[in-house]
Image (cartoon, rainbow, N blue to C red; front, side, top):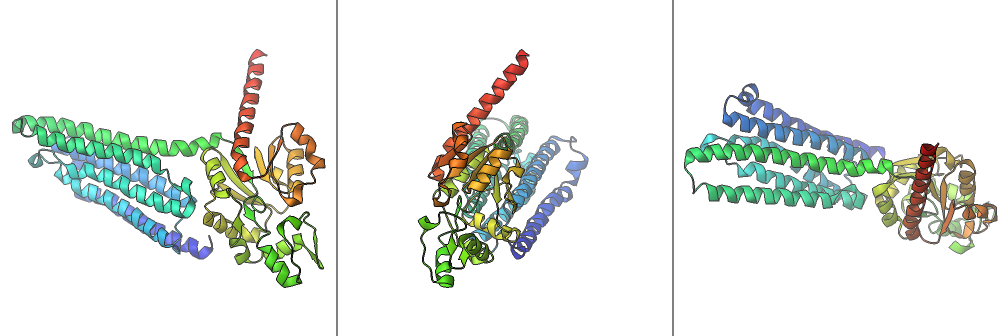
Length: 417
């Protein structure tokens, strides 16, 4: 994402932050008596707990929202991102409405406040809408919609049970008894609502933290995720009048008139259109989305540093998630200490296997089929060759199981000693 887009995203973030601040300030201004005398009456106890519930909900949401924005900022050049912003503003407005609705927890209302509890369900509907728009821009892993559905159903059932129980109970008992019962019920339900929100936030973060226990997987871009040759062919024909096809590129110093493939790629990399318009290889988005769920994805590319923002833009466009992007011109991908390297260039593969104890998944391409120098790594179980990216997740699971087994054997030996 370029600087202009980043500036727009920052301004939109500030807009939502202002509304967040307004929500928190409203609680302080509207319920002064509750804050100063929280246990002076049953009504203040309920209102105080309701206020605490929405404050903690808002603060937890604020924290997670900022973490999300660091990874997936707004791209206001896309209409779906405008709808995402609208959904996020709606969420914050719903928090404000919840604060306004606390006044209905009163003795005159028999402590019956369905508006407050129904708003939890509306908030999760807004979470879902925002998540769907985020997925439309950044891919499936941008939001855990299944988790949102789960808690949306919980809060809907919770609200319906509350509403039906009140309407059944109110006609069967006298008013004084009803007041005492509903005071206790509301205390229990407010605690339940808060606990469910904590559980939701915990589950949401638990999945993210589990990635840290997974493998570090370094992924190359050109030749692995992106087809850099397809867009190069018409450029070569225009510049040199020479027509080549994909399978003819059997080496990176392949002569093209008075130039060569590697020089033509380096020149093409100066063009944003060339970088952004690259077609992704089949299965790139699906495979990386699957790996991203459990492992740390580090994009390691030898592209010029100046192309980094374009590369990020391309990855977002192709819905390929990543935790970090590293640009290296040295060709030493071993410096990034990944457990696995997925690459297409034999020079990178050989350097990584020589300098680390890691594993490599080599993506078959016409320019990497002379593999005599690295063939012994296959026998050692450190090098795997795939014809399609769809084979990568299975190999990653195999490597992961092998590493866990090795770690367990080392642990057992240590205990025995």
